[in-house]
Length: 306
Image (cartoon, rainbow, N blue to C red; front, side):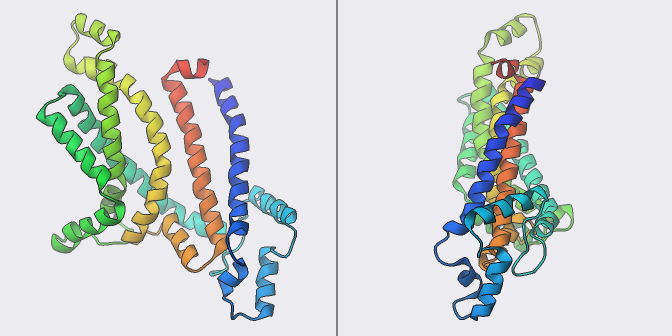
């Protein structure tokens, strides 16, 4: 297991370098002059030159890249043009909110997908199976930017059960988490159903039944743990989808996370802030995939022995 982790860490380094390089080049591939986009074409030449020097854009590209890498090693992502605060500090102040929303969306997704997929697999071609798959189709079909306002109208405006927006108590998390986790739950429920159906037909399940084990022990103790191995992999990959989907969800519910910070940076044309947010989201996605590989290898010894 240690050798497997070390091998994955070695493969991670070039990936991280590639992500950092792409994010750095993002600023230079944008059409037009970034300084003019941030200050406007009517800005004075001295102001444009001062901002260009502050961002290091007056230096050769290779020097800018070296300066960028050295800043990353120190944890320095530059200064926000709009707030004049450190980009690292801006992102770190918003990270707990984004992490809270991501965990909430994941809990909603798994809380819906596991019972729906299991019930559908245990009663195939029944009304339970049809109902669960209909719910999954509905969840996939509804986009976040439509589901969020619909939940606000239903549970915040008409019923007055939950707050409309913002972050504070657990009640503020309910609607954003449901909005974020529904689409993932719909996809995972179908995967759980298909994986569990395959596992129920394997020889070790028939052997467990022949030994006289109860149906619940056969499903919960033998079939379901093996059926969840591919689900774990997909969950790890879909966490990146949660991060990208959280941008829209945070905008709908005025949730003070990295997604709303990224949108603020885009609207104010604060490119150092946008660059930092994109880099952090990309790095989180890469690290989550690494943790998923490790967990997958721990669950299935064939992976680490391959």
